[in-house]
Image (cartoon, rainbow, N blue to C red; front, side, top):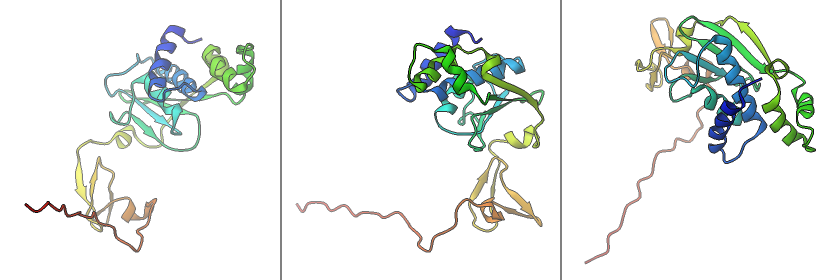
Length: 210
């Protein structure tokens, strides 16, 4: 079972970002604690040794961030949106990795750990805090299909796309036939240009006559 005092301080931090606490934040915090423990790493981190690859966004991610210290702005947390409540934790130094997720029946199990709560939502909120890791989580050692160096990349590297001319940072370009392309122009865009091109409008300021 997790250390309750430590968990409570993590949940206070996570809920302060949302002004409320929800079951998914609790799962994120519990998963963050368990993943770091499985790798033998102390948290919260102030360096970039721990990388968290989160498989959904939202409140769940806040729990992971509060527990581990990993974050998007430090480039130590990535969202690969599979729509799953799961996180892969990577020790960047050793490239050891584990994937942590809730067990499939945790919603029902939680009810037994919070019998005083009649509503399932609140039973999950409390039960997820009380359940031992062995009943709450699955922790699976994994091998990454992409090298850690490619996932992390080198910050500050800049090139320009041959087609659109926009700047590409952090080695996210695609190279073909000696040319450099952004991922959009290389064919994996999540958007397409509309017929209209919008540009910022400058509104003239009229001054009163003197």
